[in-house]
Amino acid sequence: MAENGAARPPRGGRTQRPMLWSAIEALSLALVSFAMLAMLARYLDASTFGKAAIALGIVQIACSLAESFFHDAVVQRGDLRDGDVDAAHTSSVLIALVLAAGIALNFVLAGPQGLGQDAEIARLALWMAPSIVLTGWSAMTIASMRRQLATRELALASAGSRFAAGLLGLLLLSRGFGVWALVVQQNLAALLLFVLLRAVRAPMPGLTTNLAGARRLASFAAVNSVYGLLNTNMSRIFQLLCGLVMPASVVGQVSLALRLVDMLVSVMVTGVARVTMPRLAAALHAGLGVSAGFLSATRNFCIVTMPVLVLMAALAHPLVQLVGHEGWSEAAVLVMWFALAQALRSPTFLSTTLFASLGKPQVNLFVSLIELATLALLTWLLHDPLAWIARLSVVLPLVIWLMWQQAGVGAWQLLRSVSESLLAALAMGAALAWGLPSLGWQRLPPILALLAAGLAGALIYTTLASLLLFVRRTAPIASRRPRGQTP
Image (cartoon, rainbow, N blue to C red; front, side, top):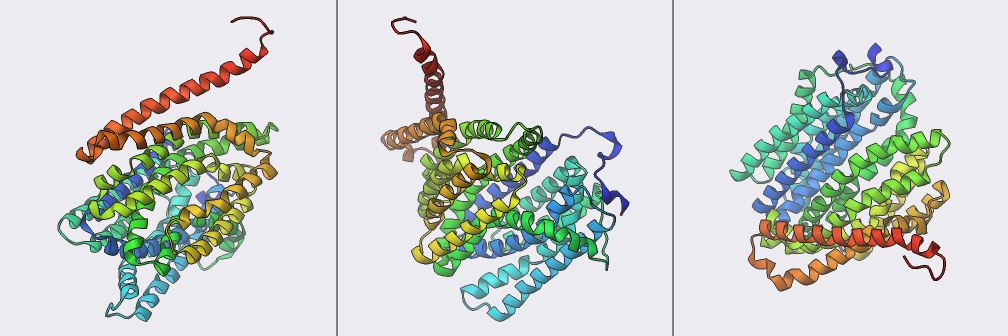
């Protein structure tokens, strides 16, 4: 395939807006995921939801591996040769087939009669396994489109497949199909994407017996894609770890809480990271250093991220009531703690972009491996969902130390860059936590409680953040006045 060798402009010379269409693609996934999550929480009990979450997590991790292993190599390598994409496509399909076969073997070992929790999870995963093969087949088509900046066509195909499959899934849930609606939605989304990619005339790699190109790309993929796989699926891996030591009902509560918080974090981080990465790389190539740009991006990012996450923590109970029902009270407590933990972690969210811009993806891989090992150990020791938060006691100091070692970004600099956002967000959360019970929000419908408290929180945060920023900017001016001089 000659066109795989280098990136080319989109067909017809049309002006593309890669950031806009990438945002639309991410937003479509978030909207469909939230709608399915809300319906599943309303129609399934916590135990059934937990089993479905474990099965879906297994399949989605397998899909991520099949889709992403060669993805970054095909998108980023400037020396891509003819035949490399075909070799990567063939390898991706083979990886998908092996993973699907592994799920089928697991079902056979668990027993086809479905006796026991493990067998029920295995049965659900087996019925969702076709989506792995379809994802592997479409993987290099998607990578080629991103390489060619055909983000409009990709966003339309992705959003169309997700919305159509999501609508059918919601219809089946409302008709009482339970977890099988999730099975249909997972497979149909992958199938429709496969079809729509062909409808938009996306580049179609072919199968080949010459896998030399895949071997050449594998060394690049081994670091970048393995890190991406771990980073993207860390919460899914945690749910699988919980399934090993906790009842399915607890896993269901954990899954609902994680999906609510991670969905919000993913939407906020993805777009900012894609904008920040080229800016930091350009600053580095110009010899300007990256610390100032990173601190500026982090400050602007936390102005929005911190209050939103603290607000989610403060409004966890009405939010979970809106999504599910009274049986999810434990999930509301977990949403509160998970959201607060992410708010405190938000100054380091762009650290992965920082290390990547420095050309050190191995640092991101090292952090992810340490995080995974810490998470597994704490889950095994604590047998408690709060192991998800406890891992940050290791991960946060490690990331902050690495930022100092690799980019000269110190902990005090990082704290100063987000101090106004942090103090204003925490004060807003404390005010809402104190004020909401006294106002009797429980008597309001969840949607009204969320709207009223959200507006109040936004007003409190904006006022406090503006006041703190004003004090910060005027204090140096006052300190420079000659003694005895009045303003």
